[in-house]
Image 1: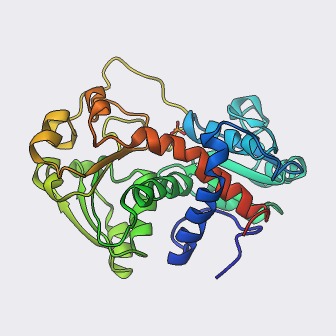
Image 2: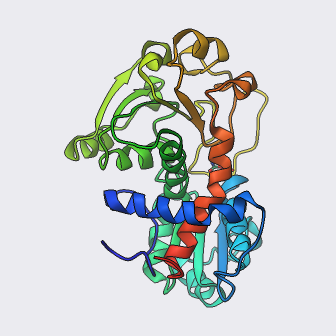
Image 3: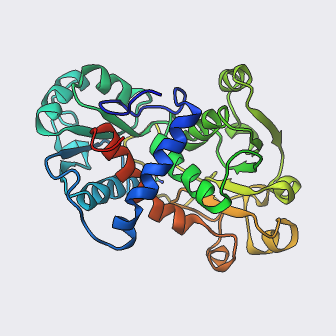
Amino acid sequence: MRSFAGRDILSLKDFEREEYFEIFAVADRLRPFAAERRNGDLLKHKTLLTAFYQPSTRTRLATEAAMHRLGGHVLGFSDAKMTRAGDFYQESMKDTVHMLEYYGDVIAMRHFSEGAPAEAARFASVPVINCGDGWGEHPTQVLTDLYTVWQDKGRLDGLTFVLVGDMRMRTMHSILRAFSRFDVKAYVVSPPEMSLLPEFKAELDEVSVQYSEIETVEKCIGDADVVYMEPVVQPDYTKSRVEATAERGLTPPAYRVTKELLASKAKSDSIVLHSLPRMDELPPEVDSTRHARYWVEAFNGVTMRMALLSLVLGALD
Ligand code: CP
């Protein structure tokens, strides 16, 4: 198995099956720090640089919290407009990264352009972690999500997932790529204008991912071990920032998971994940059902980033 030390985390396309379990084991090992709200010193000589060109609540703060939990240092920006890449100069990725690599030992980057973290990785002498790139991928989120499922179900093989939401979404790309390594079945539910793109479907077929497209969540939720959600009312992820408008619209019933739907159709032990933020596709009433796992998923976001930072910085293997 390849070592994670010094490695970029850009896509789940190139992850081997055993690497998921290796990361999960490291996450289990580090979990007590987050669970007991204490900070250790594993990365006390290391610095994380967060370069966020697009808004984030969870990913940036969970990654920074993870570094603090490991005793490391953190610096960065969460609004590129306040850097030279976002003002008059429009400083190139190459020049920006040549600066950032002097300031930190690992770079966690979110960007509105698909492929931007991969471009950064070509120029950086330190590992780059993709924290979401346009519609591209969101590998650290999906590692968190699969870890949450694995903890809950004790396995990934043999499970049926219902993926519901905008299939152009970066999490959907990452999770479907991850499925190529496991014996899982997926039902994919999205509005037609947000369905999987033909070239992505060809890629999934190439690696034998088992999925079928279904019109409504109601038609397939009864088979689901895991319901994995994203909004269909959401911004354009290729923009650096999209302001809220009065006419954001409502989610059609075909793409909503309600308390009533879960009670009437879902398996008793099925779980619901949502990387958040949510709109009306997942009403707050679901939070109090036995199916809700998205708060555990959010907590696991810290643990997973602890595991990834420790691995790429070579502190654990
Ligand atoms: N799940 C997720 O990526 O959330 P943020 O956009 O808040 O980071």
